[in-house]
Length: 301
Image 1: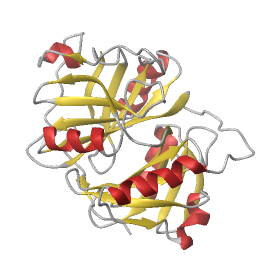
Image 2: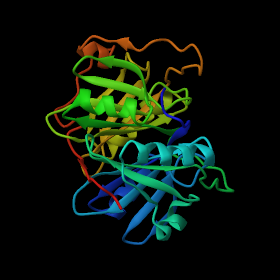
Image 3: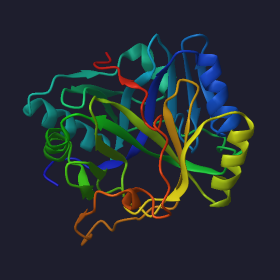
Image 4: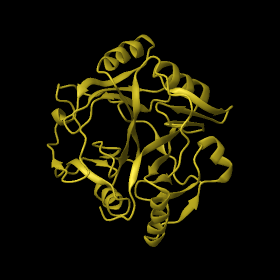
């Protein structure tokens, strides 16, 4: 890792949605995230841990990925990251002051990465709410990861490894890279999948019990939600998974279990076979609508 800052975690993912009320109900009532703040008709914040938000939803004309936010290890790391990105030639800009009360972070910055076309946000301090997150229909542990569809897999990964300091955990040549944000131990917080066009692949939420996967399948099917892949088990992370479509056709995932890496002497990334069994050791196949919807919104000022 050649960047001068340390990560803490993937903090939140922001999505644009076509019907804010409908999507807020889907993620809260059917998935079990807790609504923690809202700007009526404009945006909703939902959480699945002690922090103020794990998922942000924004009313927009076109559904897709608005931005990806990482919490860094300290304010010193935040300052070092800002200096680092500027030295690499990135334009960075502060999180707008009018957004801070809704985001409940103590300042930070954003930058646009042109190969993935994603706006990334960085901050060090985020509000821990006084009341603990209360699971309802699912025992969600945390926001797990976000995966991007990218045209230029090699170019995107070169940038994210060199400039953003992400570490490869596993890869499939000319197909996918799963990456962690050091020293966070989880197998991946962000991944890339080669695709004919850039876009959102999926957003993941980790659950604490394997039974939550089965219960979610039945609950979602009863509600008419399209299950597009799974239940199954991924080879890269070892996770048991279930993929389904949100009201805009964007793919979300529940998963249970994930490989964790030590901070020192971690194993080398594995080169995995480009095969269906790499994606599902149980032999399942995704539907054509799997991970097919959600544009990248571009520069988010």
